[in-house]
Image (spheres, rainbow, N blue to C red):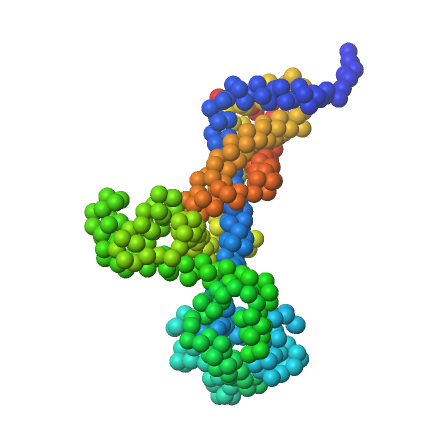
Length: 493
């Protein structure tokens, strides 16, 4: 007797039901899930540490640049008023000067040229810097066949000869080294560079002539002493010699010059053996050799220390014409600048080398490898989870679970684990990369310049990446679980 069979569409479970089953499964397999969570957490922690540290590094770099701007301005004028301008100084000035500003006007006066000639020289010096950077990255073994004994700008002079340039071109092709531009562009640059030499020499000679005119104005005094003088007369007379000092530059240079001179005056008592001996006795130092400028300035920050030092100098017949408040101010400023200089040296060391979005190539590779290892680790853990749950999968299929439901369950389970691991890793990464590592690297400035809004954005991105890599790692194990036949799964022991 024939019977009719009615095949109905399998009923799918809602997302809430699916999430409940997933959470229940994670709870019963807590140890296995915790391994997956920790793999994701470690990868996200490394990512968050790297990103957070980079963000803080960028903030600290900007802060150091702003805070050292007055000091750099003072040192610029001190150097410009003391020694003839060099070719490297000229390149740096042309790299930052804008047409019509004070630096641009000085170069025009010294070179006795117009804006077009100076603009052409600025273009040549920019390309000169690019090529010098290229040659500086080559080892001595690579440079010798290319340029012989010539180094620096002497390379450009050496390659003016046709035979030298032909040999350079042949050797570069054999070595397989890629230049920043084509050979034709480089040859054009060499011609323009040679044509720019007379203007460069005129600018340097013009600056020497300006320094000669400046000597009567200095009257045997140091540039620092003249810059520290109050009033605008020095800036006006400086204008007559050919320099162009703006009012803001004059104010900054005057303040920094006064601080520099007072720092020298305050440090001078350390050359007095009697004072050093008294200082060592007062502060319980073993001997006078232990009296360093750092220790001395540290003690001079207090009101009692400054008053004692002034009294002691009067007693030994070497009075210091400075108030106690000024002593404390100069001592604090000196300590502050010393700390700032240490941070600046770290920033300059980290800024060297090729970087992409603030990261070195090595760090980018480490991030990529860590995420790849995380994906492999999570995929391995999910495959083991599938193998342990064959009978569970078969039972669910016998009860009407669809392939899509099985796949969705594993992906959801992995995403939940990725979310938990991402949150844990982000917190760990913030502590390591946002607090501890910047503190050890930059000191007090590392904690003062934490960009909290940017760190929160990076934290959200890190959590999202943790979820994404967990989902990507779970795709293949989830597909394997969804394609498993019920009878095949029930037969597995």
